Length: 203
Length: 203
DNA sequence: GTCGGCATGTAAGCGGTTACATGATTGG
DNA sequence: CCAATCATGTAACCGCTTACATGCCGAC
Image (cartoon, rainbow over all chains, first blue to last red; front, side):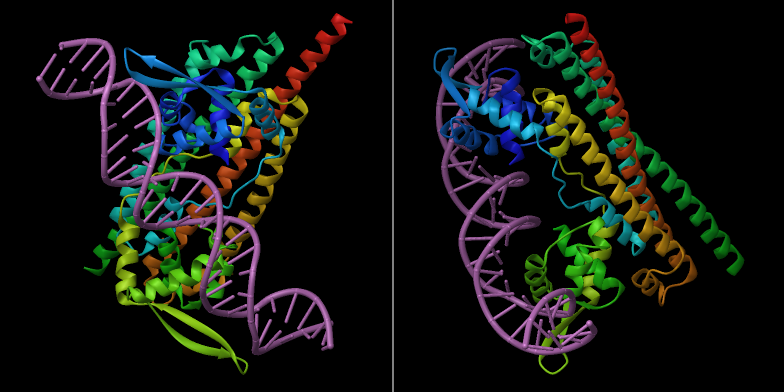
């Protein structure tokens, strides 16, 4: 159900095409919810059928069709109701941790690699998040700027605050993962040194 | 694919029934990977067909059938290979954050509630994780203790280290969420005070 | 002219959720 | 005897992934 709200949320800032949405849901908005175009196009139709969005066909150049979707009043109501509801927490599913705890069967070297990949992954993620966060707080983020339009100053401040908090939270998560991996690498190193000392004693 | 490895991982410690697995994958192991019995029973059959697990029928009391699954050598090999491979990171999907950033449309009061639920949720999670973590490091966790059997001291240390790191990592994640929610509540409070000051000035 | 990006769709398959379905055992 | 728990399964449905499929536009 979240895809539906991700789309409505996007359209609640400004109208856009399925293609625009597909771009967003792999990039910017994709931090929070990602989806591919094969999911988006059918969902847009369903939203239109349900009266939560409406579309106007336009053309790019001579022939290329482009359908611009806008949120309806009903759609805005549905989105607002959902946003105001209590969060629902799904069961945890963390393939990396699962893999990690059972890698006591694998050689130490591959555990080290696992942790290094983990650190790299979250380092990249953190950097990208910081980049977007910076653009938002410096008022250079086009889409967020559009969201301020027609809202009173306090609401604008709220919009900014929520995005600031969300991105800072995700940055903090990424930084936690980096620290965790580094700490784990140290512990692993200590164990390795212990193991090789033992091997030396045995020889 | 992770369900398969969660099951193999469980069986790599000691044999067990589908029911046992279903219990584990909602409780202990469920922190890392959760699944329901309707997924587990068919998967166990598939594992047996693939020669990665084998089962023996037993009975509880007079008639109640109970099928005990064990991992095979092939299964252990497949599990070990998977555990030693590089982690694969799936696209982010965070319905709570998505809801949070679009709740600039909802009343402040429901944002406050959202954050309080968030804090409560992760407080409970942290407490349960700490409980299990404590049992593991005090050597009171039955299943982890069984995993040490027949392994040399250094491997035992590795088994303990990985579990210690995994649980401490998850505790740290939960604590981050708690701090985040508390920080967000403070910022929200500041905004609310600003809003009511403005209302007073207007009156 | 051709290549990368714009633009929109469909279909098969897989993994997970919810609900349906059945029956035995144990302890109060 | 009754309820909770043990124990195993099936079926419908939903959301997501991967792959298939088509065609236009703008820049070099």
